[in-house]
Image (tube, rainbow, N blue to C red):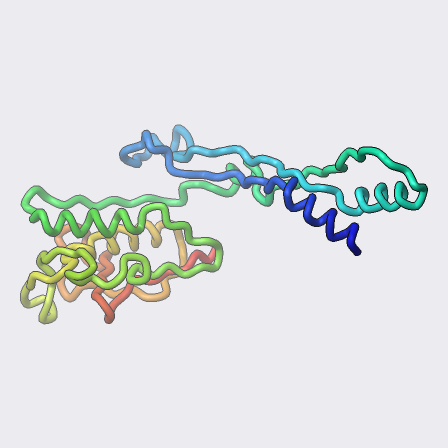
Length: 223
């Protein structure tokens, strides 16, 4: 038991964890278009790396034999390679651009509205939704309050009868853009509501509003 404990300590010092292959959006791509999709993946891949681990059973057997035979000397550590869970081949096979969508905001937008759109988009950017996981827009960007750094900008109120400046005004354009990409990707829509009046940045019926603590846009990676 003492020998096994010593081997465990050595194994922990020697162990080098394997690294999975990764994929990220190519930073040189500033805008998606059909030529981007046709000409290749909009991704940058990094290769996986094998890890190293001590073969503890073989080492224990060798040391036990030496002790039994009263042999002394050095023993070379027997090591084995540890395979990564995700190889580069698997990553390239499974990571594809399922869909993309974009909306634009016109030059008349206020600084505050553009700030809120940018803030929300940056908070969502690079989010990974694993198979079976649920994505909540509210859960990712949080409550839109002044204390949380959101600025006042126009938001639809009174069933579409009026507008009112509210913290985070404009973020519905982000949730709408995301909604249209999700629909085109054929993911499961769990909860989505449209605005009480058509939005200028999207065709009628294709928007997805959100409102702090009351309305969310939620979908699941059902792949």
